[in-house]
Image (cartoon, rainbow, N blue to C red; front, side):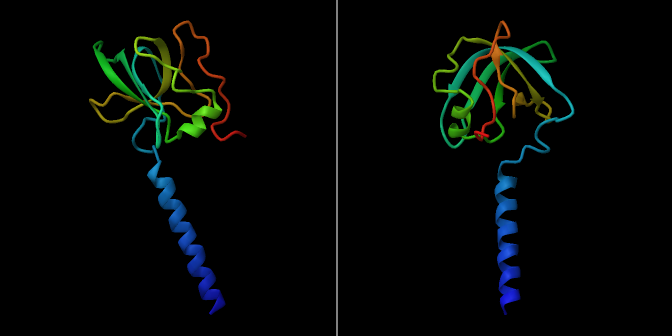
Length: 136
């Protein structure tokens, strides 16, 4: 009976953690094979849980201005604070550069930035200190 309980417990932990990871997965949403660079204007910065979000305006590959959603890959406020972000990092009208993976879906204007990728000021200088979102 002890062995059976152990297997049930191990299976429960596996399924619980795989569900949690799937909740924040970006696979299939963003094109991890390509990186784009957007010279953009900040439209909105919401430094809120569960996930902060940044909305920018930038020209797409079609040559037209579009509103883009910038994803931080599921990072919460606490993770971004460790990298130097705050509620005042971006203000509407700020000119920035964003590098990341574009959304796969046609007609969707989104970009994923993760790890050590962070938007910069228009001159290329850093906006935040950077580092690991998990304080390591």
